[in-house]
Image (cartoon, rainbow, N blue to C red; front, side, top):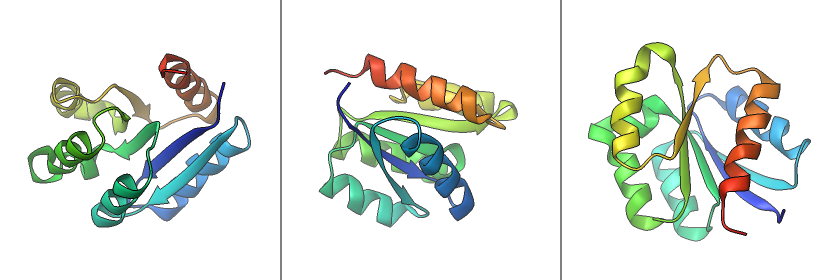
Length: 125
């Protein structure tokens, strides 16, 4: 499997770093992190990511404005959200707007790695 480029978007620096460390120590990928919308958009314009892993609240802000921008700039990038179970209605809406899949919080590292493996395997070679 070729090296995957992953953007992790969460307003919490510790969450970003935890996700990045969990993936980079486990598989051949390069993780970029962002804590805000503008920085994430700048990165997506500059780098062709395989996966964008985004916090649900950030993605849905402004009637899913960030999701719409991602889909416009990088229509082939797989977008995955991490959300809480009580956000099920928001998850459904995001899926209808083009999100590939979701991960429910709290996230255990082994489950997280397995889900990302599944996402990577479904990407074109």
